[in-house]
Length: 207
Image (cartoon, rainbow, N blue to C red):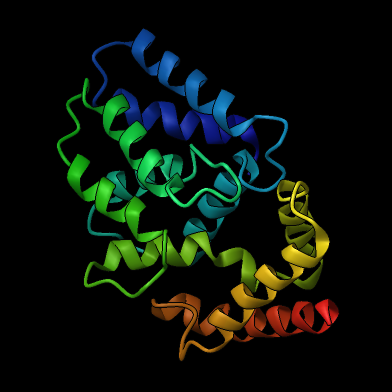
């Protein structure tokens, strides 16, 4: 998905609830600036575009598409490698940004964003869909996955290789131990096997 379309989808979404065109433009410019920071090699607008593409491909019918879309756009707006409160900070930024609009599902959006911290199954099907979209890169083709893992390493470039490798191995093993990485039928069917193959391949490369 082209970045222009990423911007268009957001602006059309927010315009439904926005007090003004100027407000919508300012909100988008703020988000664009955050996601375009030079240190963001993976958690950037490309990640948002990839999630939107995966949503389209899944042909999923969320209970509240607008809430899901806002969650996609805001879930990584604040991302500092190594910090444990990125999700909470992102959810709070979303709340602050959308509190001036007519959007009435801020609490639901906050709940969904917080779900991306641990990626555990939820009783909310839209939250499960968000989590699957967030992890859809794990089930991408091998070339795309390798680009992803290299970009993640760049984001953690300040971490010594020995420490990074240990942390990355722990991350991979935690997902491989799960009975299911994905929570919704489409992603389980189309992404699960490839995700496990990608993770096992990376784990082997880490020694």
